[in-house]
Length: 305
Image (cartoon, rainbow, N blue to C red; front, side):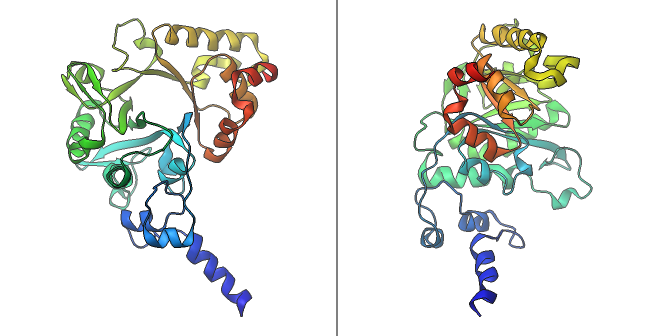
């Protein structure tokens, strides 16, 4: 009888209880990975509290593909979390491209803003070892201006947790929004009361944008390396291309980020050694383990590049 009951007990403890309930509260109540100090009583009884430490260099790429979205990244310490959005029928739907059934897809508020706000309201921070904001990167997939204007409407109830920029002066919050993808750069740059920063591109260098407006510059891994991508770390041309990108961006005091990086320690090592600040990944546990290890530092990377 015990053997027959074990699978049921396992599903009860570890299964995805949010399916069929359809509310953020169900996710918050049943998530075993939520890094909230004063978690809901049932969660405390089943699982001991865990302190989660932040990963300053880790970016959860297309985070909504994770299971569960948001909470997996938070449980592993990710400081940069990316969500793609589309403006569809006056909703900011979280998706990479237009879904067949938009009404069945969660929107930005339900998937990210509301649960983040609940954590923020309860404890005021996301990681006990980090006083600086974490970053929600919003990748706009539809028309830039209209989508951004809708975003400003949607974030209105959540501004108490957001970093703001008043007349160019940064007022840190628990979360800083960074707009990537289709970016209405000039619109955001002209705002005197601003609620988001911008993810730059190499073409934006040299234009004099303030650092708190454009704190990072990003590019696709294969765009930087071109046809030599397949040669990876063994190509001197690749090294020069990465070094050129890093030197130009960091000369302006901005962070460097590449996306679509091969999910390999060898690649992470040589990018680390040559100065890439932020590493994008779809494999959150693998990059977490790498960044938590002694192997992720520049000294080790130098030996292994």
